[in-house]
Image (cartoon, rainbow, N blue to C red):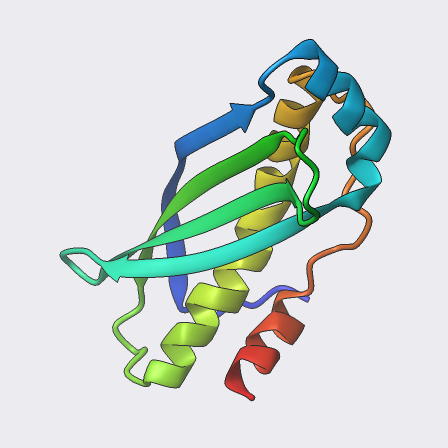
Length: 143
């Protein structure tokens, strides 16, 4: 369903920071074997800018949570500059826009960029198993 009265506009997006670390070929081969143990992490933060604008930082990391010596690290920090409608006064409403609505809008593109990066970094078969449910993440954050 299309929300006609969307209370924000994504003005621009850009990759703020990008990191891929695979120290050597041996590690690459090891990680390829063990990539199923890697987990996607998401961290969202925001800071106010001038003129009712907010910069949202959506950080994705794809890491081995285990204690393997050999590991690769993949991280992207994706910034979205968002203009918030004047009508948004409530903190609750604002945080739902930032953590949920904007994320649902930008995430498909961000995920494509990130997977592309991993593929081109020597890991051709990476897919993220589960889709990210931002509504659920948002609700869990409240409880």
